[in-house]
Amino acid sequence: MQTLSVDLGDRSYPIHIGADLLSRADLLAPHLAQKRAVIVTNTTVAPLYLDRLTETLQSVGVDVFPVVLPDGEAYKNWETLNLIFDALLTQRAERKTTLVALGGGVIGDMTGFAAASYQRGVPFIQIPTTLLSQVDSSVGGKTGINHPLGKNMIGAFYQPRVVLADTDTLKTLPPRELSAGLAEVIKYGLIWDAEFLAWLEASMDKLRALDPAAIAHAIYRSCEIKAQVVAQDEREGGIRAILNLGHTFGHAIETGMGYGNWLHGEAVGAGMVMAVQTSQRMGWLTEADVTRTRALIRAAGLPDVAPDLGVDAWLDYMGHDKKVEGGKMRFVLLKKLGEAVITADVPTDVLTGVLSAPR
Image 1: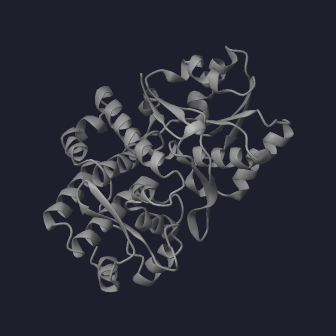
Image 2: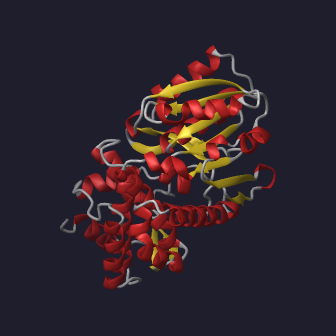
C-alpha cells in the first residue's frame, strides 16, 4: 500500500492506494464519527463489492445501511440525489453518520454533494472503484450533479475524510471504462509532468493490461499531482483550473450528445485533442506535439475525434462552462507538453477554426 496526503490544514486527509483495501477496517474506522454508516453505491457495483465492504465495517461494530442507485451519468441529477436524502431521513441519519461512496465518479460526486447538504454537512468517505475516480474525481472535494444545460453546474466543494483506492476493483472494470480513466491520467502528464507523459507513452500496453506495478504508479503519480494542485487552490480560484484540460470541450460533448452516450473520459480525451489543436493554432505547440498527443489518446483506446456539434451549439454549450468569467470563456491550453496555461485571450478565428475543422 502507498499513502499520500492532501494537505488542507484541519481538513487534510490521506489517500491510500493498494490491493485488497476493501478488507482493511483499520483504514476506515479512524475516520468514522460514530458507529453508523450509509454506503451509497449503484446497481453495477453493489453485487461486486457491497457485501464485502459491509462485512469489513461490521467487523468493527459499525451499523451499515446501503443505498443502491441506478447506474450511469444519465442519473446524476436531482431525482437520484433525492433518493439519498429519502434514505437518510427514513433511517434518521444523524449529523455524525458517515456517508461512504462506493463506486465511480457519479456515485462519488452525488454522495459528496449529499454529505455537504444533509444537515448542512455530514462526514463522508470516498472508495472509488473505477480508474477515473481513483485518479481524479475522488480527490479534491468537487461534488455535484448535472443540469440539462450544463455538466456539474450544481454542487459544492466538500472534502472527504479519507480516500481508499483499492486497485483490485479495477479487475472488474470494462475495457471502455478503463480507457476512460486513462484520459485523466494522460491529462496529468500533459499539464504538469512531461516525464510522466513519456512514461505513459512507453507503458500504455501495460496499463491497459492492468499490470499491477504500472497501474499503481499511474494512480499514485496522478493523485500526487492533483493533491499538489488542490493544496495550492482548493476552490479553483486560480491554478486548479488547469486540471480541466480538455474539459471545456469535453463537457460540451457530453451535454450535446446526451449524458451517458459518451463516457466522461472519452469526451475529455477528444476534448484534450481539441485543446492541443487550439494551443497549436496559438503558436505554442508544434504539429508534432498534436500528432504525439493524438497517438497517445488512441493508444489508450480513446476517441481522438470529437463529434460535429456545429459551431453555434459548441459555443452555446461551452458558454455554460464553470470557467466563464465576466462573460468570457477561459481555456486551459498548453504552452508546451507538460506546462498548462489558463487564458481568456483565444481569438475568435482560432476557436472557430478548431470547432469547424474537418473531423
